[in-house]
Image (cartoon, rainbow, N blue to C red; front, top):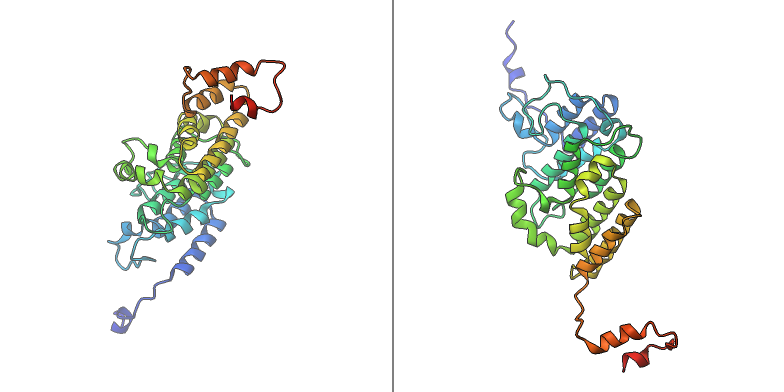
Length: 294
């Protein structure tokens, strides 16, 4: 039978963002499989992959960071992050994060995609740090029987420390251009990056520690202690405390850091040498102001 023409010409009704978010949240709650996560992420984060599909109407025609960030929030739950099974090879194989990856890698890729969509003037620029901390808290600490894999650990560190990503990272060139600008963004260095780095460093288990231990003392302690802003230096002191908490017996770490950060003192300064020698004097007065004026 031939259908009436008015059926073919009926206007299509597209759902709005809030409806799509509600549907996605319900799908993940009822069936938190990796196949379901891939479907949700594909339509909310990478809808351009379906542009050639007949009749497909994306939730948003203009890429923006809101959709990926909402998607990452939807997936930030134990039932999602703690899934250890690999995805079905027959599932969406054209996604940039690849087949057979973990739910955590998918979630981190969503955060990175949100950052690509945000301009430097956007309030969402380099966002997602709190979510990364929550992902690690679930995957490498709360309720997990297995620590992160090496691939997951490397992506976590790249997400927290994008300035230090390797050349194989697809965002390497753009991040290299932003490196100096990011260094002087006080809120980014302190409230976002350092705060998250400290939290993740304290939560990290073996694999994540082995990847993070190389950059954490150098960038989040030494470089931060030299930063011109006192707010950043304050967070750097907390970072140094995190090193002591994780490695209480490694006093040499702190000694090396302090030696690198403090400006060198001239040994030819006679007044300074006299002051140092006098500290061993048992008759030293409690009032050191007189000695300083000597």
